[in-house]
Image (cartoon, rainbow, N blue to C red; front, side, top):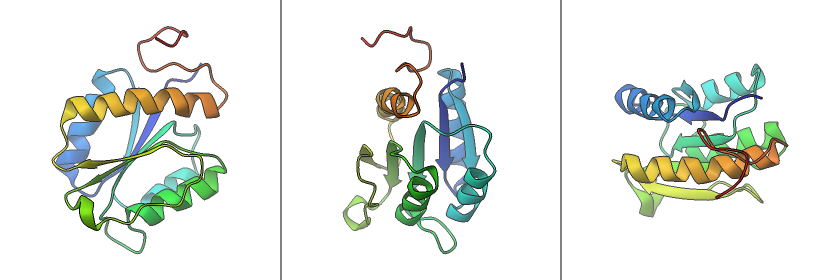
Length: 143
């Protein structure tokens, strides 16, 4: 059975590397890309659907965070639990993704809060992909 995969769209290389390390340490698979366009390219050539999306609200290029999340939702054709990160939460535009859980977290993000959000969202993401609901390191039963 495939492990939980988190797609992280972030243009800050240091933050991207830190989040990838957190995810891998917790037992998740992680795919990091630096822009909305790179995320769509990855989605179009993927070998596994992501269970959770972490996206920076301010990305370089034409697709900002909300736009990238909406396009990923459209391409997948199903809800994807999304964690939006921003240093300016009062100024972000939320993506339109009916049925998809969404949380917005302030940057710099507390690693414990981010990982708890990933854990909870991974259960939903696995469920909508048709896998038994489980997060990394847990048995098939939901606690």
